[in-house]
Image (cartoon, rainbow, N blue to C red; front, top):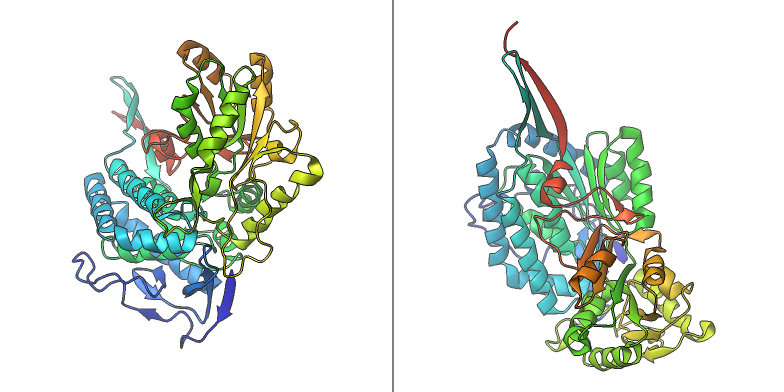
Length: 504
């Protein structure tokens, strides 16, 4: 991150750039300048900063550095908008969401290019993320939490319902900024809340443009976005008029968010880190599953909380399996996201680059045996990007860092197992519990094993499957609460019971 201070005239000055063409889409969205969006206005700040393209380390454009005053203005606008937005019909809210999805689609080329320049992922993966984001908006546009009649007699009727919370603060990570922003917007909007998006300081650009585009469709104050530095998140969690925090990020930061929400008893959803195990049984078709396993281990440079992070392979097929995995991984080209042949882009930022580099530095001193890769990256990535060659570690000790910690980079431990009870115990021996998978041609056996895995999402013969209608969240230190599905909708609501006496 490279903060810089520039003068933009008056601090927090507003322009009407976002509101020209509201509901008429007459204003063409440009992708060269970036502003906060407060009450459907493009607003600027005295101090600005910029990030870098992780593939080149060249600077990206300037973005605002928000202050407490900006947060207060956005929260006040969201609170005022909630009064009317919560009275808009469910059908009309859904129509707006579909209109928003269509608008994002109309700029998918611009968003894909911008996403690759700030996050680093290959363009094909950027397009995939945008497609998921718009499908989430469309899917949630028809979802609802119906009222439930608990009891009805001649004397009374008891109804259980879910009512909107009010103002939501969405804190977005840097690995999937578009999907995870819309993945919080969609359930918040359809349940009649308003939302303020706080992008990661490392990837503010797409989130600011999403909010600027939303200002052409939604009433003022319904969707807003503020960029800033590391102190912006605590302003959200401490604010007395934000009713819920929806956070995706590391477990360490999630604990701080939870503590910060306690004084105001905010509702919160935490989707945190993972260290997902995948168990490969001895009856699999190695040639059939190797391409899938490889993608599910290295997609987005392995910077996804639900990627395979620990690969347990039955000892009877281990040698053949790891040889096939090495061969397949060698086909994955490392390069900038603008290279159409690249599959593994750079690590997203300098902080994560140093963390991953430290993991690579342990290979020799710890005696880990690379089956592939293991070379240290260039000590000075300036002008060259934050790239690592994908690395497979051959059967490291179970208590080694590469097994117990989540690298969040393209380095994967491959481990042997023999006994079913033992491998299940090892898979569950983690503070994390986000996802896990079992791979076998024997569905009964795989299902039996899957039901004993301690994770919020467990797959058989797949990994990282997600859908807007399916609840998603973690066990243990991988999260609190669930996103998506009807269960996720309820997390954006207060439950309420109505007791209706039919006679006085």
